[in-house]
Length: 120
Length: 110
Image 1 (spheres, rainbow over the protein chains, first blue to last red):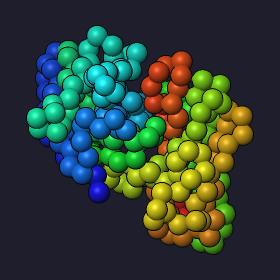
Image 2 (cartoon, each protein chain N blue to C red):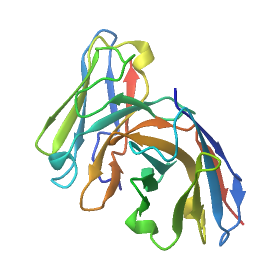
Image 3 (tube, each protein chain N blue to C red):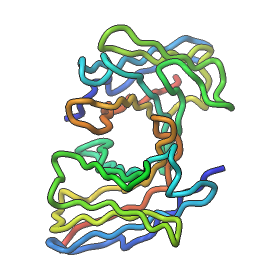
């Protein structure tokens, strides 16, 4: 059974950098069959895919066009986890953030979600 | 505004059959599989249907999925009170090179 455990701050001020970590159990971040995604949910924007990282002989990442330039998704193989960094946050980045596993082409497991508020 | 279009709400009485639609385009639903997720308040979405019409183990066969062209549907037969939840469709979008989601449908069991 795959489990994804999120951690990170729940409150940020505008212009700060959001950093979240997703610890994986029951699978490996280096799996050749998986990709590791970040998704957020807010009343105004619904479910929004942010980006992902995956290993296929080398590490690759992909990001939502709307966030390119602000987002980085990295893997830490020593801790079997992956992370999200989102720079220059604004109140529009307020949402529940989820990490999720993509396995054999589709998202199957989601972490529990962490609410993040951006407010001065 | 979500890339995939779903009705915001649906309802039915116990035992009834309810269908939730999801409309997309050739770059997402039209060219790939559709996925459905069920979400209860305060919890993460849970995979309900994968690869358009496949159920993960543990999902009752009351839930079924289908697709035609650039639209997809989730059908729930023998509606039960515990089916009251939000339902989301999703697909990979080749043009956006990312996952896209519907705005969600709130299902009420009357």
